[in-house]
Image 1 (cartoon, rainbow, N blue to C red):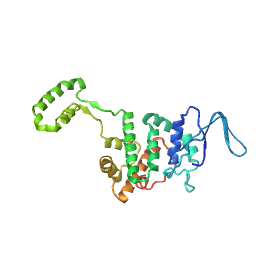
Image 2 (cartoon, rainbow, N blue to C red):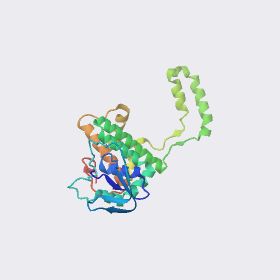
Image 3 (tube, rainbow, N blue to C red):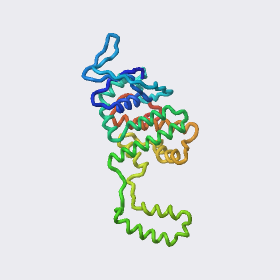
Image 4 (cartoon, rainbow, N blue to C red):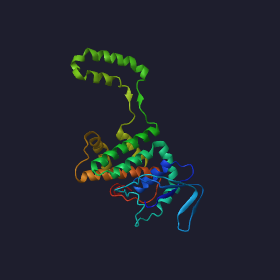
Length: 271
């Protein structure tokens, strides 16, 4: 983004504003000057002014790369005034969803991922962001863990199980304490696995589940988190693009943004 000045609407937190700008910009944004108050003006040179001006001093942000999924600087895009349109039509939705599922933290992860150099780092950061996003969404819907039977009812059952286990302690060897610990949590039931939560959010924002998305969730996610393996060559690049675009598209659909997208993979097979 070329502009160093921005006008923040009254009642809007600075972190929300910067986060939304960073998301649209495709890289971290800092505000050099903030204009607030009951009026906004413009001098003969086109420089903005306001009732109150706040100037910030900070080390300049150097972004090596920018994500272009939202084409705010693309002269060939049919969408015009993306920033103005977003802040008029979609920013309230962004703030609302941010209060529900902490979108600011997801944008922070995306911005960090964009600046890292290796594909492995990018995908790992994005996968953490994706899991966080889907988990927070599930929590917002109230899909939390439950206990069956209830904790107080399970106590007697647990004692009986531990008694049986202690009779065969020698057979378990060094694993005895591990197994004993697992018995203590047998009644803890998670409503929906991580993959279930991912599919739920994708379906809720009406993104069709393609075979590529299924592979990403059911195969690549586990290998990335537990083995540090995102595939090799073209597969690793495809994983990066799909995951990056999927997270960004979910956010855009949550906030009901109707503008252009510059997709290289997700929307090539998704209406």
